Length: 197
Ligand SMILES: [Fe+2]
Image (cartoon, rainbow, N blue to C red; front, side):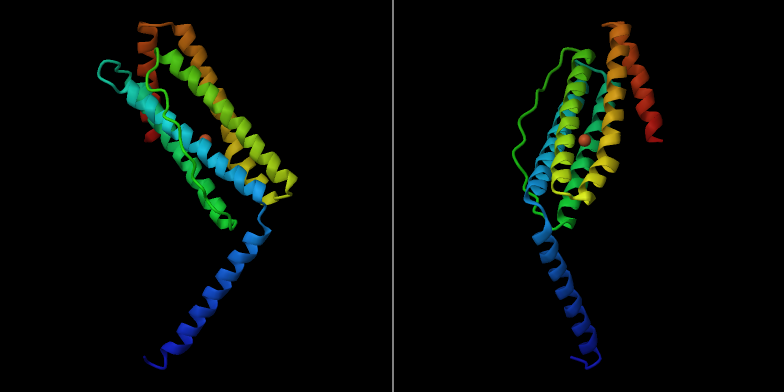
């Protein structure tokens, strides 16, 4: 080995040792209840990802044929997956351990758009109370990094999400079944495509 490589190697080893030490220190300071609450929230986000995926697959069936709802729920599913991923990154950055729990098989059929969008509202409300639970655990542990993270990355978006879905439920009710649903779906498909551009 060239003698020029020794200082570089030595410096890299010293850096690695510093990183390992930092990780051990942050792990020692990391609250176990907060760590568990984050793992539980990861499971909730992945459950939502799975449910929205089931909804998208259902509305994309040839005999169901609601392409707007299929596209909308697919987008929602991707968002939930991203929410889970952000929590995984946060957990690791805090020196916590990610433990993935089982995800239940979701419902796979719905009785029209109103049924599915009403389910989506209920699911988002569960998400909201779970996020508030995580926020409370973090507050009790005085983990200000976690409370800020939950507030800024999740809670505001969660409230807007619920509002949007409740609006959609009301629109579907007003438009009625059959042709009304068809018109709602066509409009929804345009909106999803517009947002993708
Ligand atoms: Fe989410």
